[in-house]
Image 1 (cartoon, rainbow, N blue to C red):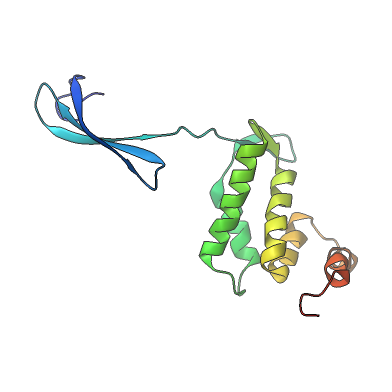
Image 2: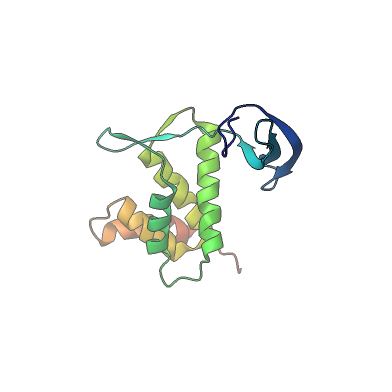
Length: 155
């Protein structure tokens, strides 16, 4: 590790401890040349999942794109930012554990809708209407029918 002050690459580790809820290791180091101390962090290198778009283009998974879609679907709904982040984390976790390096965007959308359906049905229908590109009211009815025919929670 090169010293950020003198750029010499001879140092020693003075202290190591976990940080960031155990997802990183913080190391205090001392440069053997200039004797100054500095901190480094060691983290697991995450693999970047590539999303295969409808037109075949591949791009890295983008957390912010899902968040934007969720924010639009949940506009004026009783859904907190923490709940949106939990959906995104669940989708990211599912992608990282289920696929090696690439996944179709269709699958990502289905994962998001699955999470939204359990959280807020209005937001779910909003997201589905854009994601599945509903053409008319019959598409809405087809999407709503399973929810309307399903068992009621309050009976």
